[in-house]
Image (tube, rainbow, N blue to C red):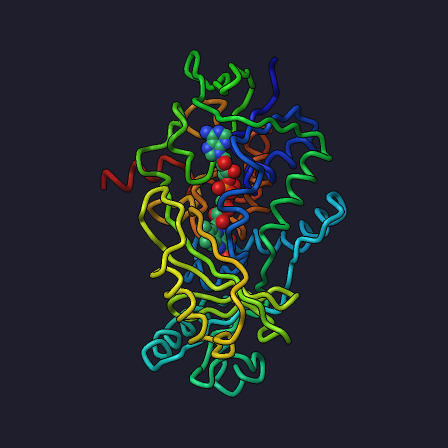
Length: 371
Ligand SMILES: Cc1cc2nc3c(=O)[nH]c(=O)nc-3n(C[C@H](O)[C@H](O)[C@H](O)COP(=O)(O)OP(=O)(O)OC[C@H]3O[C@@H](n4cnc5c(N)ncnc54)[C@H](O)[C@@H]3O)c2cc1C
């Protein structure tokens, strides 16, 4: 059977692109070897922070800002379509300096950010404690990004799946083995249940994207980088917004749970929570907010960021007609979901993308290696 579009992978990227294409009237089939959203997408912290992640102006910062700007509307849309909240919380994000070295670094960053008109405020220690009384008394000061936010990635993953399904996208379980090329274009995928023909194929297989034969991705374009998370319970709530230090972060949810993250580990696909990893994330969380030391540990987990060499995603048309990418989102796949959905769907539909995608081609990664 022939489909307009086959999407490989049902994480947030695959589901969000499928949602937009189904809404545009396309016959969309999403192929997922496991449970939709079960990998990186539901393991993430859910921080939406261009200011901390993108650091300086340029195409990546612009992409992050364009995606953040779409979040409130996407959250409302998903809550209506899926009849499920996604845990979107505004209130800004804080990057606190807990020692003099980090305070000096932050002061330098603040100067650059403000010079470029990026939305950030410099807070002294007293202002930090007025905003977040649970933060360590050691805090010397902070950068505050007032329009940043967070979302609950487990709820988001589920809502995107439900919304794509409600819009008409179909889902099928099973592994995709390869993208089939014929006459220089992508024409089908070979699924464990057989060949599925399609006018367009979207590769959204997260950290596993490079393992799909015929992906056309340069070697090393997407690799797994493991992250470990510990989930704590605070009652009453200790924190109300995301707080970064120079080593990690804490992400409070509305119900008082706090995610502590995360490691960046090059260990292939070894999905483990380790003593050293937990020690690291818990120590830095307690350093940020000492009250967390008495919080019960509810859960721990790890998963794999789909990491590209420069940390930027790989988006839009590939060098092979009919094959499109929505992968390589590294540490910012939750933040970048709304713009990925709109931009990749536009590319598949042959419409102008909402943002210039040329900095995000897979081709840039070949050029990097040769240079
Ligand atoms: C610990 C951790 C913390 C993070 N924190 C944040 C954060 O705070 N903010 C943020 O913006 N981002 C964060 N991220 C990054 C974010 O989670 C990812 O960038 C994003 O989820 C990637 O989405 P995806 O859909 O590409 O990948 P995934 O969610 O991994 O989905 C890919 C899907 O493809 C399926 N698949 C793979 N191969 C095949 C195949 N051959 N056939 C069929 N199906 C296949 C997989 O089973 C999987 O379901 C974090 C990641 C981790 C690990």
